[in-house]
Amino acid sequence: MKLDPFYPIFDSADWLERMLPLGVKLVQLRIKDKGEAEIGREIARAKLLCDKAGCDLVINDYWHLAIEEGCDFLHLGQEDLDTADMAAIRSAGLRLGVSSHDEAELERALALAPDYIALGPVYPTILKAMRWDPQGLHRLGEWKRRLGDIPLVGIGGISLERAEGVFEAGADIVAAVTDITLNADPEARLRAWVAATRSHLG
Ligand SMILES: Cc1ncc(COP(=O)(O)OP(=O)(O)O)c(N)n1
Ligand SMILES: Cc1ncsc1CCOP(=O)(O)O
Ligand SMILES: [Mg+2]
Figure 1 (cartoon, rainbow, N blue to C red):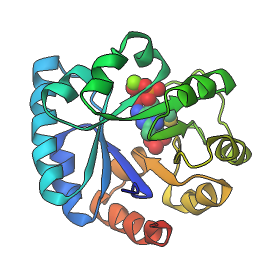
Figure 2: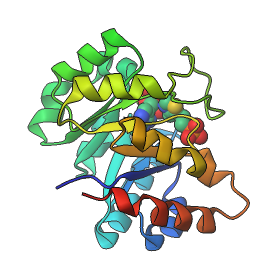
Figure 3: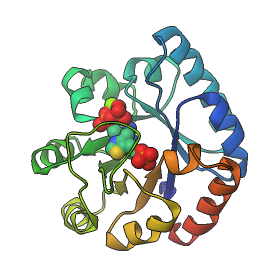
Figure 4: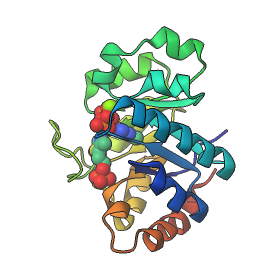
């Protein structure tokens, strides 16, 4: 099944409970500041919420917890790939999204035949410190030509106002964090994202 073109990322099941009823069909749970037991509980709750909402749930980083909780989609960055047990991930049947920031990382991602490849940061991001300068829109076009049918996710500093340009440059899917979570009215902002990205549904 084709992935939704709008890919918000949240750091708790509480956020999912608020946002899924508003029309999210692809979401990532990205938790950085909790212990594994608590993250396991968050994943279990996120899975129940996503199953009920018919939303694809992608678990960031915690591949073993994703397997334990019966999830079916994982996002791994290049450093995560250094330690992840790909055989276990494959035999559990998980779909996989992989980050890339440069040519070497793109090659490594392509070799895994993933379900999407992300390129970032497209624009400067305030979410986390990054070793890479913003990639710029032209790089998305370059990446899309290399990816062929593999969906390309644009991430990093993408606002609703910037989203259409990111699609036009070659992204199939646009991911966003702080444009929603730091907005004064996250629900209204998310509704606007859902409406604006509908035209990119397959
Ligand atoms: C869709 C998407 N793209 C990129 C990332 C970043 O993954 P990673 O490089 O492993 O960094 P962290 O998110 O783990 O800090 C992502 N999570 N999702
Ligand atoms: C996790 C991650 N990986 C590349 S950019 C980024 C942060 C995206 O957050 P925002 O949409 O707030 O810039
Ligand atoms: Mg990671």
